Image 1 (cartoon, rainbow, N blue to C red):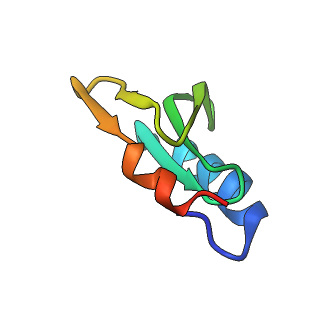
Image 2: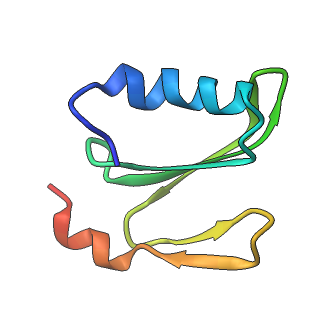
Length: 77
């Protein structure tokens, strides 16, 4: 979930997580009303990134599950 520090949430954290080979990073971006999926870390960055608006089904790579983001539409601006 995004905090008051947008640069940290959108740039620093994904970079740090990829650098330590965390294979998946999900971000609920309240400013964009979207869920961002970062996967496949290589060389300190995620090669695969996708953005899904609230309400869209979000497949989680390598997990065989799909997140239902429809409930998040209640919080959209």
